[in-house]
Amino acid sequence: MKIPESILKKVQKPARYTGGEWGQIVKPREGMAARVAFCFPDTYEIGMSNIGMRILYDVLNKCENIACERCFAPWDDMEEQLREHKIPLCTLENSDPLYDFDIVAFTLQYELCYTTMINMLELGGVEILSSNRKNDDPLVLVGGPCTFNSEPFADFVDACIIGEGEEVIVEFTNLYIEHKKAGFDREKFLHEAAKIEGVYVPAMYKTEYNDDGTIKSFEPIYQDVPRTVRKRIMKDMDKSPYPEKFIVPFIQTVQDRITLEVYRGCIRGCRFCQAGQIFRPVREKSVEVLCDQARKLADSTGYGEMTLSSLSISDYTCISKLTDELLKWTDDEKISLSLPSLRVDSFTKELMDKISTVRTGTLTFAPEAGTQRLRDVINKNVFEDDLYRACRVAFEGGKSQVKLYFMQGLPTETDEDLDGINALCEGVIDTFYNTPGRVKKAPQVTISCACFIPKPFTAFQWEPQCDMDELLRKQQYLKGKIMNRKIRYNYHDATVSRIEAVFARGDRKLGAALLEAHKRGMRFDSWEEFFSYEKWLEVFDACCIDPAFYANRERAEDEILPWDNIDIGVTKEFLLREKHNAHAGKATPNCREKCAGCGANKLGGERACCPSLQK
Image 1 (tube, helix red, strand yellow):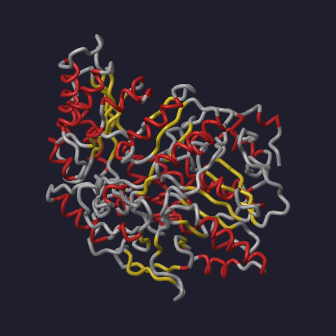
Image 2 (image 1 turned 90 degrees about the vertical axis):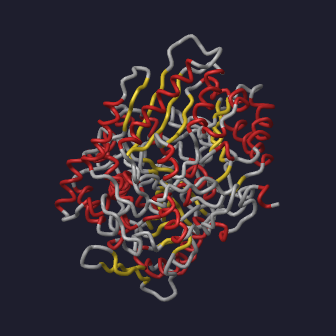
Image 3 (image 1 turned 120 degrees about the horizontal axis):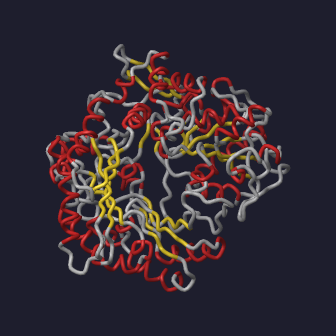
């Protein structure tokens, strides 16, 4: 169902909706045992930058009997045209509506995309509520970081992939094919799917609540369904599938370059960081495999930039060898290397000299907190001198601008810690002027402050988020402390962070709020143009939901949490131990210095730890 040219002429960036890009995979509609519509609940430019979507698109299409096509959220101008002309939301490859597919899969990367997912289902002609879907309706499958607490959107999905999807999405689809051949029965299929490791089927579980609104029990409805769902991981990243070709968009995307995934997991134990826990254990790719993947992607795409992707790239044990091997040919072919996640304690002149984008762009570091006391609380394990040393290296190399990331509202934070942010920035400026051979121009320190959000599967999952008045006060307090015009202060919208906290820590009761929000036309909540805090408060009020119950309430340590039905390998005992260490101001060494006994090692896998530890 091609979108008419007359409509494409009326919308911004029509290439978002046409497909036909270099590298796309188009399979025939007929002859496929299963067809999957892979959906990203945001714009084309953001979705096409997601490496997980690129990997799974490739994985599914390498199966001869499975076809996978892409679909992205239409911007409001296109949505208006679709509704006006009664055109369903379609995929890019064959222009088929979502309701024609066997499986409609979404990747959920952030909490504020839930309403967009629901809106896409409606636009695609798919029944919104899973309980209303019949045997001939598509299965709605979701994956991504948000599935580690699937409860808020449980009413809208049939199944969730917990963890890494390369293997499990194929297992799920093959099981569907078997049931389809035998005469498809939705409930029987979901019952069997719930037995696949890494698959959570919300309908197979029931929740009971205490009078105070907390969870009383969470039980499977069948004895042969696991009580907790263990996440899936790729145990050997050298054998993990990775595309040899990327689709090359016609328009610029957020990540308009080759993305080379170097490793998964993180050796650090930042207590606020969900990714550092849910992606454990660390699993590295070898230099040989990475170089082979890099060369194939460079040959097939023609991109002029390559980013080395991981949670903390400078912690890759072979970073020096990898960059040396890549530079043997990337410089000659005018391909620049980018390192997006540098730590101040591992930033060196050697890296700066090697990496062209580090030499030419603004350097970004994340101290996260303004005082050493608070950095010990959050287990950041970096020191003031580390930051000044890294900045000195940058200034010696001709830099004059530095960007620093901080968080506000962290557990135990005081105004003295906020004062420390300003003092740290002043120290960076002093470092600039005390650096011999610096450039003869004024320095600029840009600070970006995010609001702390207590996330599931972190040491701070029991902590409350500061209430709205306190978050706003903290933001204005720091603003009043910054007097130096060489320091530029940016801060996140606290109202957005509060709604994100509600859904990050929510339970199934929030499904009513999502449904009400959809009825009111809410979507694209991560976009400033669309987000409305007042509308969300009206939605919660209409559904008799107190957002403070989810965002601003301290959880008891023995309370059943909405995500306790998921096993990420990291134990709850470890997270509680880390919570207590935080309040004692006690730091925990990183995984290479000393094993802290988090439990993730039981997931196993080749190259699961750094080579030096394996020896």
